[in-house]
Image (tube, rainbow, N blue to C red; front, side, top):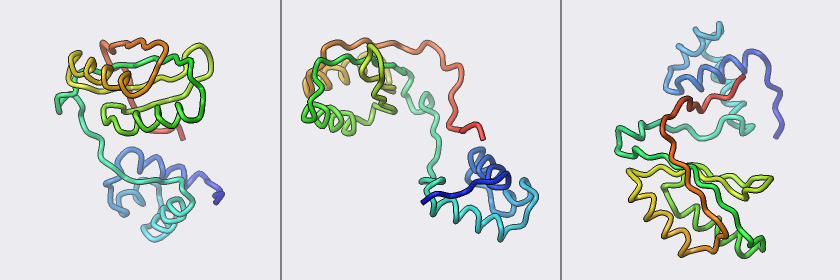
Length: 153
């Protein structure tokens, strides 16, 4: 379903990205509208798939996940069976926060959150035991400079 998004929708979406736990009254006040039109627009945006599931952002370090690795994967396998097996392996690993298939020299990049280097090694050993990969390079993030879930509306 395609939906037209106007300036008011963008304001509402920006408020939801800032804090989805805001009340309808708060959102309406911030965007210069009243509660009912804001609710109708949010419902329209949900129905159209613009707004997906709502969740809570957790502090990884506060929960003991202090190491963030970016894992670059090259493979010589490109058959459908291998790709299905690889996807299943990634889906089964909660350490994998993001996974992207790339154009260029690197086939995949993963964002992996673990408590420490030993936990990363356990993740790595498990992954290569499940699927054949040609080359894996792990890059440890020394400092997170910027991280956001907000789209630039």
